[in-house]
Length: 410
Image (cartoon, rainbow, N blue to C red; front, side, top):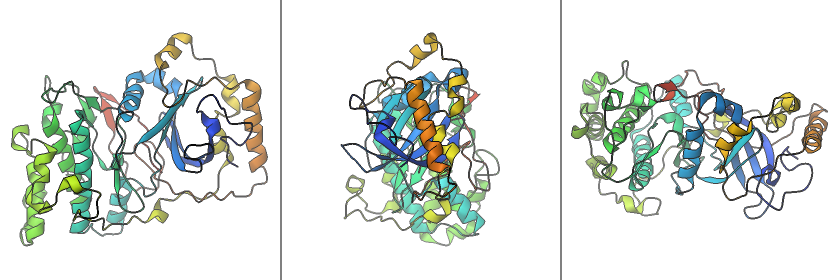
């Protein structure tokens, strides 16, 4: 048995971590950890999920209450095959928990790095599929007046069958109307449109088109431009001119990254009408008759962790033995987390004896030193999550402050 739900009864009054069996830690970041779990109760008993555990202390120190509430509120209204969907949220005295889809194939940063290390390149059909899939995700968001604001490979997850999911809505923004603007400078510098980097700017959907174009450039060359906003390599690439498909892809990408927003595709719908997609009807995406099929299947073995659960990983979800020695979080700070819950009522704090029982149970479980097979694949995700990726990913920031955010994966 895993840590969650392995001792004691399942809480019948609310959804909390007693409803989940923990498999192992699958990622670490500045705000906490991500664990793969199975659900122990109906509905969806036996299904795999990912739980993102956020440390309240870290949120208090960085004053990022708005981000965690924003992400949860957006996920409550987003449900689509191209989104890493949320399912539950709850909290205890020291942590916030967000239960989301478990995605098996890794994030696109992992696969871009792997292709580069192997001195290979994505095939044209791979790039076309990745492009069409992300356009569907962005169109779904934009139809709901939501700007993602941090489009990059780290926030695009790939399922083991090749389908993509957009994740990490922590710095996203919901516009008040279709013709409204956003004025906040948020995102990852290397992917930010030029207008976002200017003081007193207004930006909207064409800025997302620019970020999408940078991601597309990275799919083609497996690297970012040498300097932010410098696409001279693509402009001068004569090899692409010799192939009609690649020539069209080049023109499409350059249209996305035009320096002036008015010169880009104004909407995702406009981009979907480009010649590279032929007569594809994007309203049929996900159906059998949609002509652009997944051609890239991720090698899930290269994004797998060892299949044994470490004692410290299991204990970490409950704070470990040092949890009792930490000072309590003051009520004035706890009030800032009020309302953080979804498909549940706010959970009661575990008693000291209950937490001690869980920790002792974990010790007993792992004291033999034997590995416990889990069979869980994972995604080593963005920013601070420890992976074997050769290069560090660009970092996101919000309003000029670096954002040490924890993406979701599996």
